[in-house]
Length: 206
Image 1: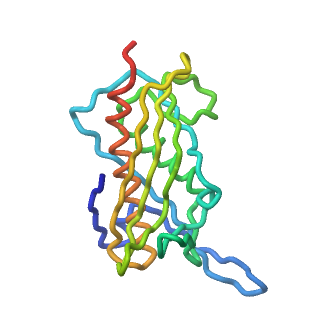
Image 2: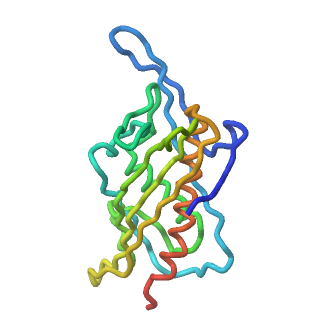
């Protein structure tokens, strides 16, 4: 699933950029911290269910379990952008984006993290397979790629209700990092928008 979104200014990115300084060998290097903000527009045909949904922090590879912004200039290379980081590790960032977006959708009684200590009717387990900017051969700008393996579980019966892979690619308007981060923002938003009706469809009736 791919949703094409363009942003004309930093104010429209739906993200927070914080500029600070990092001391390296006595020199102070500028470091920009990005924190995507994700919202979804609920489809009026989506049902509302009286269920509490817990979203676990995704499992991922060692390479992606970091707050560095990953970029793949070629299929065999995984690098990171210099002078910029995410506000949290990629798995925690994805979890927060989904908890906030699905919670704000108004389609669930509540959306929480398992560590919140709140009993849940549904548990969403995730594997984060890709969260990186990917350059196609000969491309001037990358695509932000988000790929999640989602498994919906009934925690009380400890049974799998449904599983599906969600993959979103969003083209960056430019190779500059603010535009690349905007593409990540859009990819996360599209992923949250795709996951919501799937969860509602497979939630068991009481």
